[in-house]
Length: 386
Ligand SMILES: *[C@@H]1O[C@H](CO)[C@@H](O)[C@H](O)[C@H]1NC(C)=O
Ligand SMILES: *[C@@H]1O[C@H](CO)[C@@H](O)[C@H](O)[C@H]1NC(C)=O
Ligand SMILES: *[C@@H]1O[C@H](CO)[C@@H](O)[C@H](O)[C@H]1NC(C)=O
Ligand SMILES: *[C@@H]1O[C@H](CO)[C@@H](O)[C@H](O)[C@H]1NC(C)=O
Ligand SMILES: *[C@@H]1O[C@H](CO)[C@@H](O)[C@H](O)[C@H]1NC(C)=O
Ligand SMILES: *[C@@H]1O[C@H](CO)[C@@H](O)[C@H](O)[C@H]1NC(C)=O
Ligand SMILES: *[C@@H]1O[C@H](CO)[C@@H](O)[C@H](O)[C@H]1NC(C)=O
Ligand SMILES: *[C@@H]1O[C@H](CO)[C@@H](O)[C@H](O)[C@H]1NC(C)=O
Ligand SMILES: *[C@@H]1O[C@H](CO)[C@@H](O)[C@H](O)[C@H]1NC(C)=O
Image 1 (cartoon, rainbow, N blue to C red):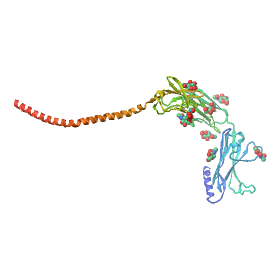
Image 2 (image 1 turned 135 degrees about the vertical axis):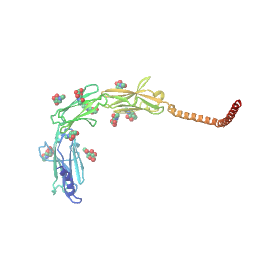
Image 3 (image 1 turned 90 degrees about the horizontal axis):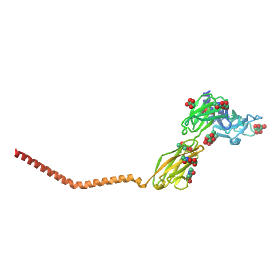
Image 4 (image 1 turned 180 degrees about the vertical axis):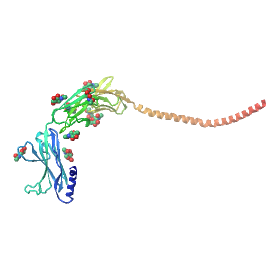
């Protein structure tokens, strides 16, 4: 069966040789789907033939009092119907039904034909349209009741309770696209222990019941902003730009960031653009304060960043250290100084050494002679005394 399905396209491709004409045939038929109100389903159909087959979609509502199919087109039902098709030898067509409503329930028919007279109004085509049907059933999204309870300051238990008594074949907990926990339990209640609050633990969790179709709900674990400086002390050179950064990775994102200068004169808010020396760039999880043309006298202070969301506000302090232009040069000047001193010492040493060397040599030579002669005298003296 599986092999047959695999071989079908190959066989059809063989029958529809390069030049030969051949009647359109299905390679893939649409599969029946159960959709949830508000969500989407996709039906897919593929046909092969020569000349190129055309694929159409037709619909008959479950709740219609007359039995007749009507054709669907891209953009039908106030743009809730989308059709994506490729019009080639191996023709494909996908029907997307979005923002489902109960009236979308019914029979969907994929029709394919490559008869040149297929759309002729009076001529009866030699070969009729081939048809393949699938059912779409739209059901109400079952209620999922959620609950989030703090156990300790750092832990929380999330609970999801599925109201419908549909058959559950398992559960999945997700966060940020990653599966946190998965089981094959059939209970209509699922729980998850959150740890690492208030920082990493915060976020949007999704509880998913594996049913037909899968149903899920988002559980928000919200905390006040957890604001941290990027560096406790930032350094900048006089005249350059100082860059101070604060971050908050907690959920929900920070909606308002503000910066304050903490100087002996008091605390002063920095308005964006209050002076063109200050530029603040903020996003939901980060704020950057840039101070242009740094000045030792006026800018060497503590700065407070403050992040606010609907649950509260929190700040942190960054100290800005401004170095004088000269200070930046000190290490360089030091090295230059050292080199100058060394060169001078070597130069003086060499200058003094040249004439001395000659004298020393003469001295040592004469000294040796002298001592030799002295020694001779001594031995002579010793001999004499002997
Ligand atoms: C059949 O019902 C549909 C709506 O369900 C309507 O648009 C169409 O006109 C009806 N056709 C006939 C022949 O009654
Ligand atoms: C239909 O196809 C176009 C182009 O290939 C693509 O951009 C679009 O996302 C498709 N629509 C859907 C619903 O996948
Ligand atoms: C789950 O919800 C049902 C009603 O939908 C209720 O009877 C039941 O007590 C709830 N279970 C828990 C653990 O909250
Ligand atoms: C979750 O926390 C509850 C209460 O603290 C505890 O009874 C349960 O064993 C924990 N579950 C897991 C998987 O750690
Ligand atoms: C439900 O989710 C599971 C796990 O991702 C997936 O294997 C399965 O195909 C989904 N079922 C439906 C009907 O979407
Ligand atoms: C969860 O958070 C998102 C993003 O902040 C928000 O749009 C949504 O309404 C929240 N949901 C609930 C149930 O509070
Ligand atoms: C901050 O948010 C942006 C997009 O909103 C994201 O790309 C970036 O990874 C986030 N950074 C952190 C530290 O969470
Ligand atoms: C501050 O002003 C700059 C330039 O005018 C702008 O790009 C930036 O988005 C502003 N930041 C805030 C937090 O308003
Ligand atoms: C942060 O700003 C909020 C609102 O402007 C204020 O209530 C709070 O005291 C500030 N916190 C700090 C640490 O500056």
